Image (cartoon, rainbow, N blue to C red; front, side, top):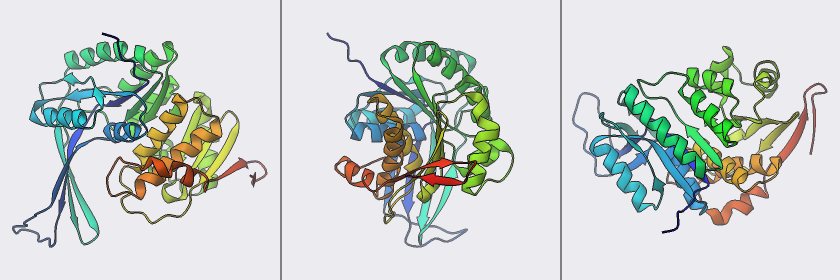
Length: 323
């Protein structure tokens, strides 16, 4: 039997079952009844996986799964025809609950299971085998209990030795430690960038200054800072870019950052030019925002959105930009 080679490997170390409760009324310290519940295989990396699957690119999803919740996620991935090679753990995969009422969302996030030293070792062994069939690797989300903050750093170092392109989308100490290993692309948002440099960052000029003063030393190929609906500021090989998406009617922005990562991964897999990589990522984020489902894009709209993207090259010393 011929071995199927996947091209993109997605990592979700702390997955969850995402449960959305849509409430017509909400009362504290009382019974709340709900007739609309949506359960999906959740976690940032699984959102990335679903979006990549929309493009028909070949992929494999990996991470840790345990208990009946873990089996639910496996079944969901099977139904979505997403190849997966997760490591079994003794603990139960977590639940993440969202209560939606009157246009507002309240989230209850379980901490999740603790990963043992033996389970972490099994993941590394599994990962070393999987990346032989991958060109691009994405790692998204928080680290579960039991893993050292340097765990992503270890994964990046292994990937770099094999010439793989590693996209890291995390925050806090995991990001701080991860960038030391020179991932191929990072995608912090403004809050994550502020946390990384220990000061509040809001203005475009401040983003550029932080990249120049705090991040260039790590020699990361692509540094992309997400600005939400305003697009992103990016750095690649000595050039700064401001990518501005078209104004759209947002339906569900949850997962748009994960969709950006999927867009970057697909574009890198297809060996697109740097500007195309940046535009693709931003376009996928916009496409997710206009859909009700999280981690989904209408691929027939990709070219339409891309053609409306504005790309400016920024020259920080002069404060000017050109198109």
